[in-house]
Length: 318
Image (cartoon, rainbow, N blue to C red; front, side, top):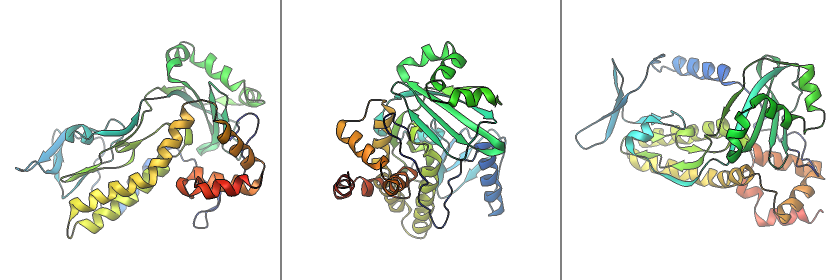
């Protein structure tokens, strides 16, 4: 993570013996998850659109329907993304919400990937490069949301201009080959949604969404899915509604600090002097850099890492 005057670099700490983070493309990951669900006994319907929810006489959600099918269940889980149909149908409210701070464009290059994920904070731009499947590198550029329309007027020109501000990166891209088209969006708000109610729950981006600058959306979605699965397992024999409420409470407790940190980084404002001093101290210590990257990847809870006593400990080494 390069902030200009200093960079925090190093391997994040191992998690359950796994020392390597993986940047898996959704084209690969989604198939793995779909096949695993089918192998576990789920009925999988591909090329099918859910059109609405089914409710009983009390208004409790009891299933979903499409053009030619119905499916009923004790609980309906909306894992259907930022613009969730389930959330819309039940009127799930937003909270701790802020609008999109950035817009972003990304594409994939062949012959560019290195062994590391690279994040460059350039003031009014951020550039991210990381290796992924098939020897490709994803190259991602973010700008303030207010500049989205200006950026999209010349996507490739503005994209390469941002890349050119990172020493050596433009040469790496010129020596490689762009393998796919540019993709972009300015629809990256930060929020929690009410994520439980009578017979329904939300998980992943449907219930908790944030700017991609910390690259933790899919990781957080897995954690949220685990919390929800545990809640459903505990609640089905007795009190499902109470278990789903506890799921939301635990999710928010886990991720509220991450949401706030992501929102602050996405603002593209220079870090406050005390935060800049903290980052510089971390960058000067390989051991502290590893601990910091653990917080960024989620293996160290952010409240624990940024606790006053831990900050005091770090600054005492300056």
